[in-house]
Length: 288
Image (cartoon, rainbow, N blue to C red; front, side, top):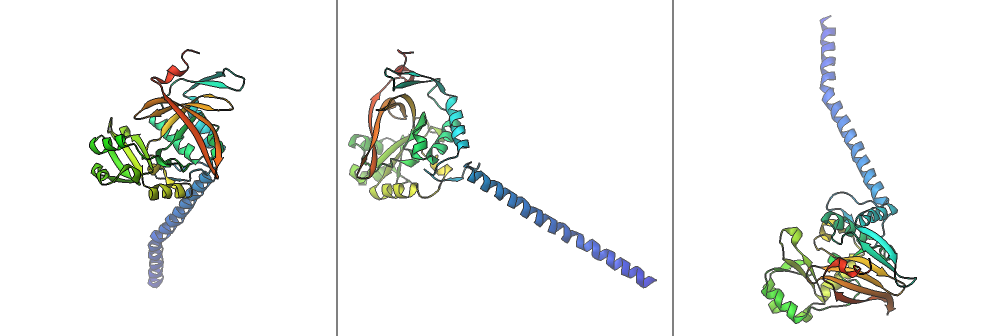
């Protein structure tokens, strides 16, 4: 009788000892299911064209976006858009805006979506972007002027990046304007540096590397948003040209006329003409 009691006690103790093992197995199995579900959700969102929500998500420029993201883009634009009227000819239209100042949240979201659009999708948008991390992908080069270059060396409100790397302003003394084929100036207000600017300079090698790889490899959103782009509001259009209101951190507002792109040696070039304007709403004020 005592033998049976001990046997039962041993069996009961073994059962107790197995409980943590059993619980651990359930936890591992559950974790795997949760992780797989998260992965499936992520893959579903990506296949549907929805960006991942963390700041370091990767996007592919020029790949194209889903109808869902196009709708999201239009919803944000509609917050600022006022109305559209006929222009002076049957083919032309004029566009009016409630405000030409986008909130940081709105322009960031629009820019991230815009960069992913195809050229065809971009052509249909009323608010567009230029330069920024994307640079000028047409292949045209624009060395900085000597006057502007010298001001970057002397004035500490300008912070210099060469081929994507931060350098001291004094580095420019040992180089010349013709060492750079492209430059872009953006605001550093978002970084807490009011009235200070980021100057991005690209050498021929750095510029070619940017052009060759930017549209071939994914880029993180956080990296993309390091450089604020210029924002353009469509003001008037017809079959021959587009007129946009263009905001730049240094020159302020200007009207930019874009003529139809033409193919030259296999490269599509857009032609621009810009004129300064004091206030955004002054463009249509006499015709409202």
